[in-house]
Amino acid sequence: MRGGVFLKNDLNIKLISMEDIMAAGCCDIQEVIRVIEEVLVDYKNGGVMLPDKISQIFNSETQDRINCMPSTLMKDGVCGVKWVSVFPENPHKFSSQNVSGVIILSELEQGFPFAVMDGTLITALRTACMGAIGAKYLARKDSHTYGTIGSGEQAKAHFIAIKQMFPQIDTCYVASRSEHGENQFIDTMKKKYPDVDFVACNSDYDKATKNADIIVTAVSCQEPLLKASAVRKGAYYCHVGGWEDEYAVPQKASKIVCDDWHSLKHRGSPTIARMYKEGLLEDSDIYANVADIIDGTKPGRENDDEICYFNSIGLSFVDVSVAYSFYKKVLNNNLGKDWNIQKTDVTEALLKSI
Image 1 (cartoon, rainbow, N blue to C red):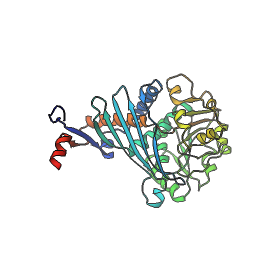
Image 2 (spheres, rainbow, N blue to C red):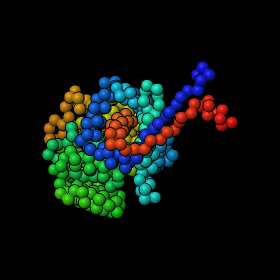
Image 3 (spheres, rainbow, N blue to C red):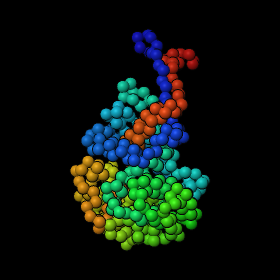
Image 4 (spheres, one colour):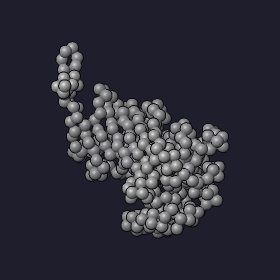
């Protein structure tokens, strides 16, 4: 209410489901990578606001948590927040996914929200595409063997994204804590990729990685499953989760690259964050943030013998940027549902309600 006159409000929000995102053709790996690379450089150049992530951890052992992750894309005039839960034991306890999220987007002219979107697919795609970006600059160009420790949704998503960047991959070693997990990964992937020889490793993590050009660890447990002795010369290692590798792995690496070292080093669980906290790793040990390689400030892989270590902690502005690009595609395809959440002035609503 202003000057005794009720304000006119017509607050419409677009509700966008995972199925809308799929129907709009948003899941183009190369396009998502382009969007991510662009926003990473924008962030480096000061074009992004990134407040601290708020994480509520409900179980320190399993790392059950819900995160609130805000950020703002200044040139687009878009502020967003991802509300995402990570309950690692869900697949084993409830046969359900371990990550679930929503993303809210608001404009900066009046500050109104304009979209509420599925964030689960965006999270999976963003995380995997970050690993693929790391591989693009840090893996050997002739890489053709792949090893995964982990068989869940992120393990699958990473294989999908990296295979898109390295179509010559012809062998994939799979190690999980259960035979069922390995078989489920292989049964799912071999239907889409008949050109790949999928090898179940029966929980033998060394077998999964010792002959791999590209290594990915995507596991929910907090223990060092990847051993330095099982990382060969010239390998690219993508670290997805928390404490997944022994300290000797980053110590063996020729280059350690992050999405954002400043954000990562203050997080508790990733291996290199643990090492930093314990005084075993210094700022000078980090070769680069990946944006420095994307924009040409630093070279990526420089020879075939380097072991390149990549750790992406997850930055909310990447999710928001991907979400905003998907929002525009969904609108162009006349998808999503309109939700009018307010027409009435707040004071008028109160007066009518009492």
